[in-house]
Image (cartoon, rainbow, N blue to C red; front, side, top):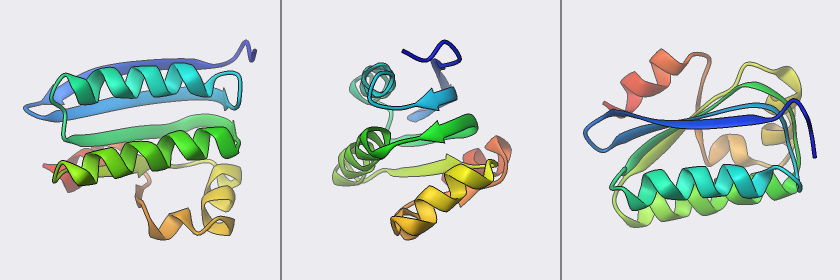
Length: 116
């Protein structure tokens, strides 16, 4: 497991939540990411910001968690936005076409504002 990985979740307002990730999000750490995100969604969050600005690496397992999250949010009439500042993460999202699935912002403030 990556020693650099961390995940936290917080409510940012009525129905609005933020998941903040840092380090490597991969097959070993993605289950913790998923659990954290699901806790927010099950608590009534329907607008979610996933802050990947501290992420240094992301693999297909983590992308699957993101896809599952956006499907769940959209099914409930909500929305999800990502914060991406790392070029490597940006590139993975672009290569996989997920940059067209997610709304991507350079700052958490911009992402929160887009879902307000």
